[in-house]
Amino acid sequence: MSYLHNIGRYFLMIKQMFRKPTKWSVLRHLIFKDIDDLIINSIGIVSFIAFFVGGVVTIQTALNMTNPLIPKTLVGFATRQSVVLEFAPTFISIIMAGKVGSFITSSIGTMRVTEQIDALEVMGINAVNYLVFPKFVALMLYPFLISIAIFLGIIGGMAACVFGGFASLDDYIAGIQLDFIPFHIAYAFIKTFVFAFLLATIPSYHGFYMTGGALEVGKASTTSFVWTSVAIILLNYILTQMLLS
Amino acid sequence: MIEVNNIHKSFGDNEILKGISTKFEKGKTNLVIGQSGSGKTVFLKTLLGLFTPDEGSIIYDGSDYSNLSTDEKSTLRSKMGMVFQGSALFDSMTIAENVKFPLRMFTKQSKSEMNDRVDIVLKRVNLDDAHNKLPSEASGGMQKRVAIARAIVNQPRYLFCDEPNSGLDPRTATVIDNLIQEITKEYDITTIINTHDMNSVMEIGEKIIFLKNGLKEWEGSNKNIFKTDNEAVTDFVYSSDLFKRVQKMYLDEDV
Image (tube, rainbow over all chains, first blue to last red; front, top):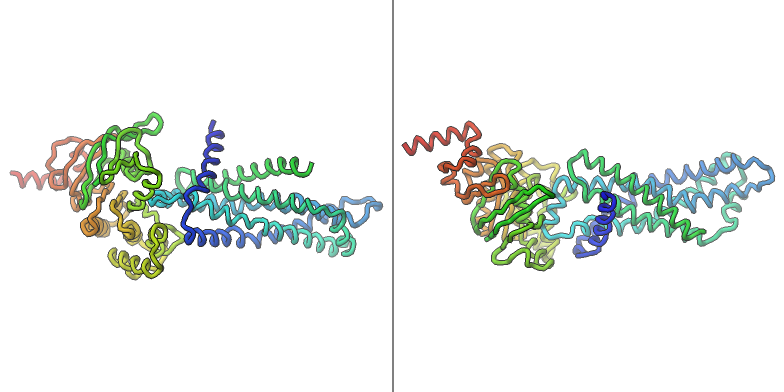
């Protein structure tokens, strides 16, 4: 029953997010601030993880291709497919559920605990629109982060491949161009937009409706990470089934 | 003026407000007192429109809140100022930005007009040199004064204060009490203060209602609270040694 209650309240919150908009002059500043907090401040960690995980994917692929009949170009091909289809959109989103999601839940949750949300509501402000909508808009730039992750994942793979001596640079570059299907990029970005929506709204929901004190803010952050990850994994399965099969 | 008629409010099976009726007059500091758990905060949040009463009506200067449209409710709320127990200042904004916030949200004033207004209200609460500080850099008393400045910047018709001097030393608490009373007179607004601080009751309690278990137990002023024979009120008022001595002083005066 509690799950149904929460799901219903989550959808009502989303509806509320688009109602009674905050004044544009105020909203504009909030959006820029959230772009800085959620997107710009994540570039470093996303780049670091993408580069090294791209390298690890390449090493693992190369080490498992023991048959000499398999062409070396497959190392680049497998890296590209892994990074574009799953690693960048899904794996990075799970990491972002931890980084950005817990930031959103704890910042909104702290506002709840310290009555700042009550202060907004008393003034007659639509607190959901004021707090959640700018995060939603900021995270519409999330594909920009995923583009960086795709690019650096493939570059990381190339570095690992060449410096590890698994294949030549020419083989790797030929591999990443092999059987390229443009729709796979579209698929990755469709998933990215859906995950961006989840990343903005699920942690906001857990922060906005939390009750209690400082300890509960920590608990709400953990719960929001769990549920955001669950939603990402489930929707990843559904979207993959719908778009690729 | 705010007129409250027989309001009831329950959470599940737990009835918190059991039919409270009273009037809060304009230009007066109206105090709601009572022990912890007596329903004061729920009562105040119901007056603010954060909770909807299950029964009864709240009339703000002739307008019944429950009959207002959503837009009218928003307009009415923009005419309410609230000082929260923990001040509820926005952490990410400076003191000046906190005070300017209601102006940015609800007025079409130019930047210079807004800055002038912020200067005036910060000066009014004796904080004319704290514009660029963050709330975390301000003391508890300063935060309360900023909260008062933010509450009055948009010239509200109603001012609500939830335990405005909790956590403050007696001297600062008196400064805050007096500031609220002065502002109430100066702006001619309806002020309602939730408190269990007897110093506030003595200082500024022009009208007092005493709540017990969700019911209005007593109504009066600071002039007659020490003379009432209502047992619940006397239990509350004379729960500290200091006020037992005050009671003795009153009794001695009578003799």
